[in-house]
Image 1: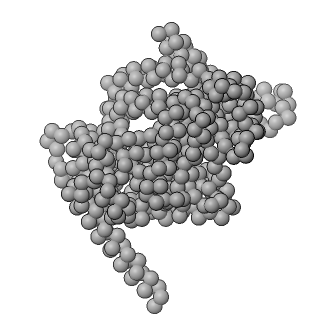
Image 2: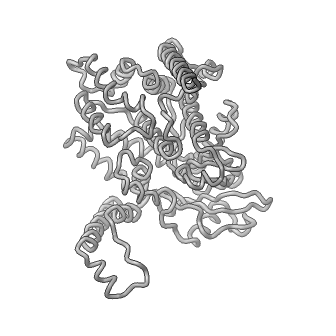
Image 3: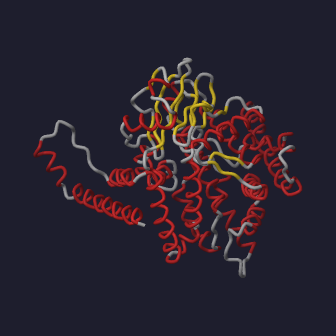
Length: 471
């Protein structure tokens, strides 16, 4: 309890600092101080988004995780905040090297100089839970060393104590918080953050993902292999990938990588593991998705947060996603009612629900990403959510969060892509892989037939357009 109270006191101090930093900047005092002392550095305004980002970083891993969501969801947050919070992905202030060396020695039983032929003191990346350094094993293999931040667990536990109570109060006061299922989000975060703090589990997840890619015959989507003898709960040594983050448009182009092709392959692989095995990467922000150049491939990093579905959940999620692809809003309404997402069941007019779902979600299905304006769509989606009391289970929210991440990369690298209209992304459901995945095709067949028919119509339309242009 003392830790919880102490944590609350620290957060209160940081929020107070945030307020006075805002006053210091907005009143012009900061600029005046800069002029008086004639700093050699050019004056840089302290914008609101930077103040908030610095405060989040100072408050620690839990809030940095929230910052990563802001960074990777520009459709839901103002662009200036999404841009500023990019630093939360892998550029958080690192902890001192002597602390890192002490943790590695304690966990692996030997000092760094004995374990590695070389070790880079400057981190490749530093994020909410850990920081990563490049190294070389004695056999010459290039690896990265992921080391957990010291003292992270007590901070997370205290934050979760306050977050649970804050979610409870907010849900009592605001309908929007209830519809957003804040308590469910917090409990899901509680589960995932504890899994993320165990690097032995992450190493197992890396092996499992690579095993699934081998089973599917996918060679150009992969995760780094862990070094089995150098893995503990707080240290993870694994294969090093060289490439570019998914949002590094200039770097990807300079390397001659076809960003659209490999983004589609990465998203397809993610959907395959989710739909065929109920296993999916649950934190696919830009710091964890890479375009590899030699040979061209997609690299997925950081398997600390993994989503897993039961067979029943897997079928529900598939029906939910496939209903979009099939443009079957009646099927979408049925799934939402079945999973309890539509809480206003009393006197529910299903025909009106189907009509409203088609009106607000239709543009997401029919338009290319470049043409979608979230600032225009979100108010209508919110109104429909309020009208029918739509609140999705936490498992569905985790899926939607990943789709928002992929949506951002697609807008940068593949603006003509439509996630719900690209048959390639779900074509594996028409292959022998699906037959061996324990899927109930009596349930899924109607949606799959509609998707197949929609794709055939699209092919005919494209062929007709090509013939007209040729003529």
